[in-house]
Length: 254
Ligand SMILES: [Zn+2]
Image 1: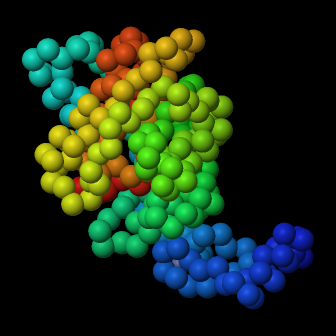
Image 2 (image 1 turned 180 degrees about the vertical axis):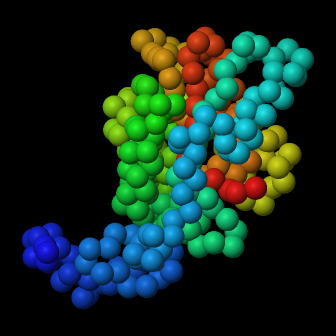
């Protein structure tokens, strides 16, 4: 049995004496070898396992949005749009505390936690036949003013780790948020869709040299309105043989 401690673990143990680390989900104090979650919350993560399923409730919801757009008069992108793959690491329910993981990344500057769970999702995507050929990762952009206020873009934190797990390139020079959208939290589904439609623009100058399979990345999939607005902007600028899939840390279970 291996019970000797590495230098890093000793350092962690000493620093825990002064500044105890706690479980993101239940708040218990963490042991030296626990990272971000205690063993109980870690064992109970409500994983979606969507990465191995071509069709799942998240991808069905997203593809339904794409279909709706195809039926709009003047729809620009092709009728032969392929089914978009979609995956999230875990479920995010109003009554479960796992929503504290993306909240820690978005509101509490806990970038390490975001990276830790993004790495976990990255390992699953890299092992999935639907996602392993992703060659370009594009995070949902923040408006530059929001990014400047927060200091980072949470979707980019996740996207960088996914790109590294997939051996893909992280591209933040293609998709831009053209205007500030109101915060989405208190809006209805229809209001959210209106709020983000056409908020995104593509820099077509930077599209050269890509691409086979794009993975659009965000922190949480709720209605999918934001990711769909990004999808539309990209699809309008790209040929239909370039696949666009989506991945998030968490998905709201409907
Ligand atoms: Zn816990």
